[in-house]
Length: 383
Image (cartoon, rainbow, N blue to C red; front, side):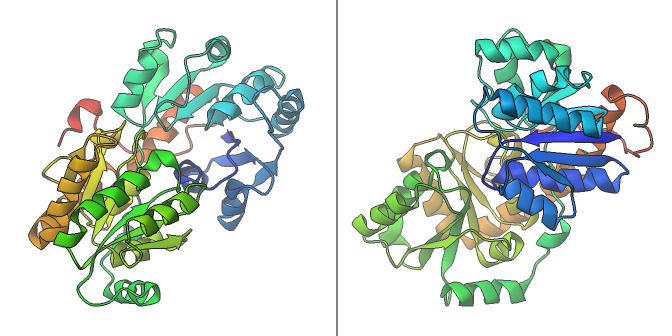
């Protein structure tokens, strides 16, 4: 079937990487995805590198009539069986555009808490939404709490992870560490995320400062780019952590970076599920994370990692103190995380669930994509 995907985000974040990864999987299953995205955006670049067709359309704001018309024109030309929107602006533009293009089924995927807002415009346009897909139980509860989204239109499809790139690789570990300048028995924690206020880098640096004297060989790597970096660099200087915190910038070799680190930190203020956490588990790395959003669907406390309240620096420092200082705990959490990723979050299972949804609501021609048995439901994710 033909699937038109609309995304208006300019940067290449976790949601955009997810989109390209899943669209590639759908293509392998025999579907025909087309990505409608901002010109010169991260999605467009990444999609082209992955061999996916794109249409570049300026989407300057949520009420752009020109963007609505351009999306409608692209949809009329492509004639999709289904339109998938991946962020709020894309939904607000694509919903009326589908009305102008023959009214194909409209699906919205919400991958982050507090982003699909309970506003009048969404309530109005939501009448045209065939299904709202979320990636975690906390997100489903948030959407259900609005009171105007019918329960039978809400569905959970959790993210999956391709485990193959994350096999143990001592060569990659040494290469990345040598490149960064990390030597000896240094224990490295890393934040792999956009460098923005909601990802918890500020709190993690403060937590490291609180325990730095107890762990003279501990480092923190901040992997990613974003608007907060100058502030973080100033914070590091003020706390005299220049030799302990490294800014690696944007990296395309995340599996290799994960080989080089020992701990993954995700102290987010809000989160849908956390693709980085799936990558950490696939690489058998222990996790220290907040209890924000769908993180609680992924990390099992005292089994695959440690969870702390968002913005709680003392609790975060205590958790880091423990994992920095105990190699046995790191190994135990990491091994359990790998097993959990293998069992509950395989990429093939996620793709199966999307193809099952396409078959259900997409119309003729959808049954040619093979699917396996359903993954476990939400109630089975506690262990």
